[in-house]
Figure (tube, rainbow, N blue to C red):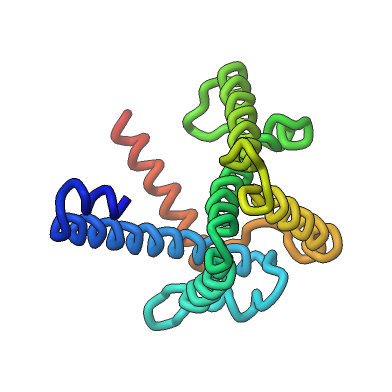
Length: 222
């Protein structure tokens, strides 16, 4: 792409465009690290992280930010990112892994709601389209997620060889199997779902504040 811009617009514009793209990639990486660190911290807080959860879930008392979770997430990302140094095939597998992993995380809760066990525990929120349309949307979502994950596994070349093979299927399946083994061996003993960040006094204060706000809204409508 840099060569195309250079041929069309010259060196100065090519440097400007590539600098802008590099800055945008930096911002995207920062936003992903923020999201990942918060997810890792929440999982550690709930004792769902396999190792170091007591260390990772600590909040910095001065700036009120999970600094340790951010550093932990960044180090894991750097280790996984070393795959791009192998060759282009490994880099493509890493990019496909990100897409497939995200879609699996997004689609799994929707799939669970469609199953009998999840359907019996599902409680609609304030925005609810009814059972009929909700089920149609859920089925469409699951079908789309399965389709995207399968497409991410395909190589981008008709003639498949060791250099053109998409190894995302190997990395993904290995990751999923390790996660299942961890859950059935150890995870279900420790992980019991999300935990509150508030102590009893703060939790009670928050509940009172919510009730007062609801009363004010109802009084205004009345």
